[in-house]
Amino acid sequence: MVRSRLLLFCLFTTLASAQTTTSKEVESVYSGAHAFYLELHQNPELSSHETQTAAKLAARLRSAGYDVTEHVGGTGVVALLKNGVGPTIMLRTELDALPVEEKTGLAYASKVHTKDDAGREVPVMHACGHDLHIASLLATAEIMARSKNTWHGTLMLIGQPAEETISGAKTMVADGLFTRFPKPDVGIALHVYNAQPAGKVAIVPGIYDANADSLRITIYGKSGHGSAPHTAIDPIVIAARTILALQTIPSREVKPGEMVVVTVGYIRAGTKNNIIPDEAEMGLTVRTYKAEVRKQVLAAIARITKAEAAAAGAPREPSIEPYEGTDSVYNDPALADRLKGTLEAALGKENVIVEGPHTGSEDYSVFVEQGIPSFYFSLGGADPQKFAEAKAAGTILPSNHSSLFAPDVDPALHTGIMAEVAVLRNLLNTTPEELRKLTVHRAAD
Ligand SMILES: [Zn+2]
Ligand SMILES: [Zn+2]
Image (cartoon, rainbow, N blue to C red; front, side):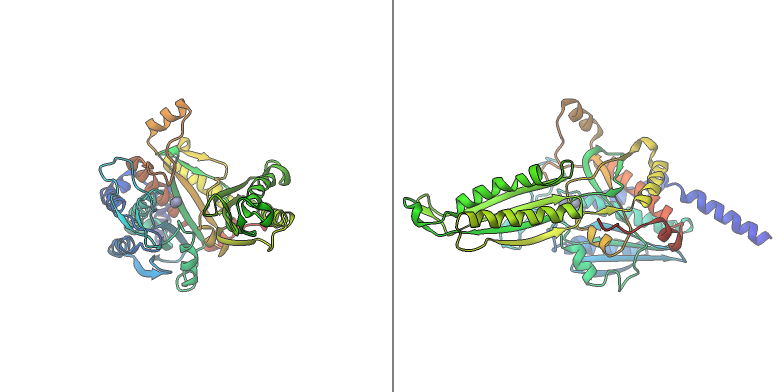
């Protein structure tokens, strides 16, 4: 009887503290996290070259008590903290930065230059905010390690390389992320952006972002003198007609209201004004939300491209080469609904916003495809005052990947840590069976 009362008491205190992340807890790790952020921001590394970033994160997680494995799928880091029986919950951060020259004018702005994979000298900047995600994950890791009485199960933290080249998630999975380590019952990730002010988070139940397909199209013609078009077949004219015809896919072929973007981002052809070249190359990015729309659009691109070449009497069918594609990230709706309540309790109801899907893309979708029900949410990063001014003026703050992207670190990092701890504690007070019943895998759309 006494024992069961004691158990009941323990359960009650556990549940009570499981519901909240306190500011005091965040404060206890904040100065270290902030210093780590500044260090990462000033030392950004390009995709697949995140050796120092990964080593620093691994060392800090090790000293926080985690069982850390490095070099998973390249520079990937996996850190485990086992705390009794319960579900396995994964929290992911990206590690990489971008070839962008920082122009924020901040005292801690990056001055780093390096050689890219093609041997070109490029500037490097954490222009997507992955440095903030890493710092937030570390602080969250420290809080979770110090409060093992508030949760049970296995916490799995991963530092993923090469998100910006949409390759790191794949290489980690191929290197045994879910076979050498426990397969998570649920996966979590966040991304900072400027579409909301710091202090707020935004959630998107269901489809979070877009399917992305990159295509390299080569149109073949027949070269000749610029003064004698009748002796040639001009691939530039074919390309021009093709580019315009491709825009009829979103406007004429796909049902109005479905999201489709077909962008021809570059066209390369010819060397001189009086030569008709042999071929023309163009690069496309294609974004969609639904699988059936994606299929329809890719088929239409192939059909139109081939037919325009045939109409011009091209000597060969164009080549259409897909590269760097990824599926949209899917947020389990029931999980999003549950964690919305958790975030509201931790941050205040007014600080949790529900949004529609984004047109960007990212390779977290690889983990979802591996059967990990997930919750991927957005973290407001804009300076609240600048955000209000921009809104009033009808302007937009610099987005991720801009040389001017500068999250308002103090409120954003604080909120990121609060949110992550709250979400992890909530999930690490369930059972794998409960999570299985709650979540559904993405319906075949
Ligand atoms: Zn990015
Ligand atoms: Zn990013």
